[in-house]
Amino acid sequence: MRHLITLADLTPVEIDRIFSITEDMKNKFQKGLREPLLPGRVMALLFEKQSLRTRVSFEAGMTHLGGSSLFLGPDVGFGRRESIADFGRTLSEYVDVIVVRANCHQTVVDLAEHCSCSVINGLTDFAHPCQAMADLYTIREVAGPLQGRTLAWIGDANNVVRSLAVGCGKVGIKLVMATPEKYRFDDQTLAWLKREVPDLELTVTADPVEAVGDALVVYTDVWASMGQESERKTRRRDFADYQVNARLMSHAQKGALFMHCLPARRGEEVTDEVIDGPTSIVVRQAANRMHAQKGILAWMLGAKA
Ligand code: CP
Ligand code: NVA
Image (cartoon, rainbow, N blue to C red; front, side, top):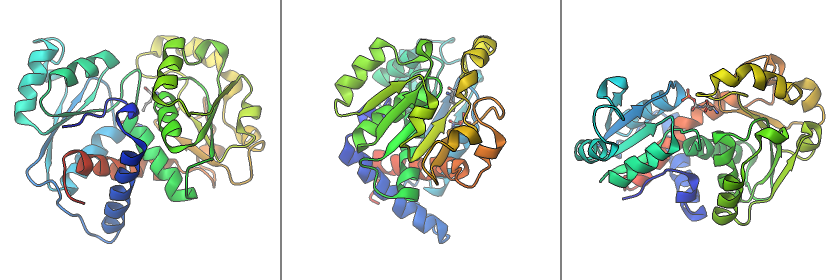
């Protein structure tokens, strides 16, 4: 039984295997084939925060695989009615896998510790491993082998880039981050990355122009993540020079791809001309959430694919 709490839980070989399963299933899906690899399996989606992509892509994907899903919102009283341990022990008697989106990363760690079924992190303040898996799969699909490529991250050192950093380290992508000093990875994250992905090539700068210079991919995310709403005004000011706009993209290589995990705050971290521009792959990226997660589910729940 396996969990996916951060991408540190997967080896490079396992990531590659999941990508192969994903590719096979996506090709079949595009021909109208939906192989029911997980008949009768049940997935719970336990969400403390809002979601469009993660929730719907998991639900749709599990339906394609012949299983079913249960969305568990605030009415189950997670974290309020009983201990996380009792909640996890009980829920895992009913379902095969729990996808959990939690305010606090520790909640997911604690839940997994007490579950007898697999637990997948569907986003915490610390990590978003399913996003990173779909993103790496998308880059591979659009641009071919990942080893030696460069991804430029412009903005906050948040959950999404923390997961991308682990993923990049595992597949050999160089990560260049342009982030104001105050918003960079803390020492704990840097120590964790050093431990989990010692081979990661990470460069940090304050200059977005410098960061995009060699990049195949320019990636950004909101300046204030869920749970940081009260900091929005300050962050809008602190990140004002970090907008991904046509001027910044003009310093990247010709044809550099633009990525964003979505939802975006258009006019803040990215302009319409970039997110809707010819090299933006944000919609394919969102679509691949479903395909990559089907790959994760099929791999994790032991289906032969
Ligand atoms: N990218 C992402 O996780 O989107 P949602 O918050 O809509 O699930
Ligand atoms: N960093 C964002 C990602 C949303 C998918 C957040 O946590 O709100």
